[in-house]
Image (cartoon, rainbow, N blue to C red; front, side, top):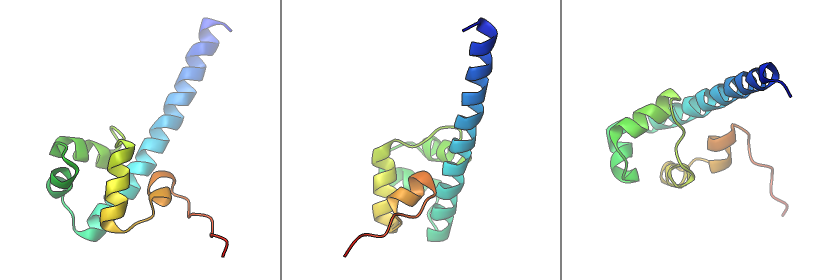
Length: 93
């Protein structure tokens, strides 16, 4: 694979990663807003800096899985939806 092909591949992955980060950020921001939770308050119960939460909400960075888990549990939202945007598959009864 030539250098040009590698560069194009990297740019395509970066674009896809960017879109995923923005989608995650939108779901996270919407969830926190709906619950009336500020970035400062979320940072406090997640034991991270307020800047971390603000970066997550803007799509600059992505929260670690433990933060997703705690947010989902605390705000009673589905973690699968929060991470992927997809509704969970119905469970067999």
